[in-house]
Length: 411
Image (cartoon, rainbow, N blue to C red; front, side):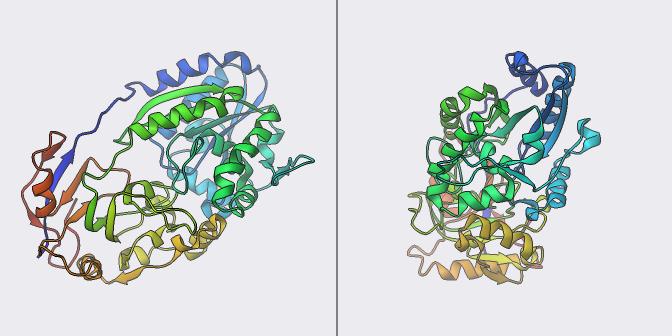
């Protein structure tokens, strides 16, 4: 019988106490970039960003106070099934609705072709954004799930994949990782050169998924200054307490947790042909047991796992999952893992795949998801290794991991 103990990891925890004040203070330096009467598009993506509705509403109200006419555009490539209606649903799941935000949301997959005469790739922009007087980029800066470089996930990516909608996502991803690493910055320069982007609002979160930094950047500064914000995000990223794990059980995955459903930076798996696998952590087998409601059936990234529960499998919307997976071009991540009838069986299958455990005591860990790593469960062998560390607090004694019906106990 598998028994696990609940522990708490302590990470550095800088955070903003008043989100609205921070937004207003940062926007103040951008005041002269907005003129009364102008229509201003605000980009809102599909990630589960902390305080998203509060931040967007504050931006809207500030723009209104300056005499502008703001509206929101869903900026999320192929997410939401690659449809205007699906992307509206994604925003609504985060509390971003016209009534709550106090402004219209204009959702369309129609784009304007801005490809220069000597292109490296096609360049597109959302038509509503292009026809507005100006655009404000808003996004979280964090490590990308597919590659690493000076610009990963943030305002630069939002200016390209977000503003360019499904067409731009298809264009960039058709080049594979080369497109993400090299063509996104090049394309962003073309978008910024249009003069449509007034400024960006970059958000950085701490290891507890809390807003720790809000920074407004003029359009001319975005490409140069975003890498420093990425360094801040990297320094405050959570991680698992040990590097060698036999079975990692993950309660849930989803698009609101990571663009890849499961964050490869946390689990130590990339699964992109031609790209190296992370050096750590070293996990032999991964089980995933549920899909978040905010994913709307999009289980992209399930191929990063070895075994999934029937519960998760029954929630998969293949159309939404396939659209996102094929657009990314990373088909390995879209493969359906072994499906187990219940949680206990999923663990049993995963453990069998690990081969012989030399000391007879498997190294097992259970996390809620790849965002929330402050509290987790560990098996006796892992507990023995970490119990005396100053950053570890033992919350509970060893107890059974599964209930009578084979389901995971309450986290």
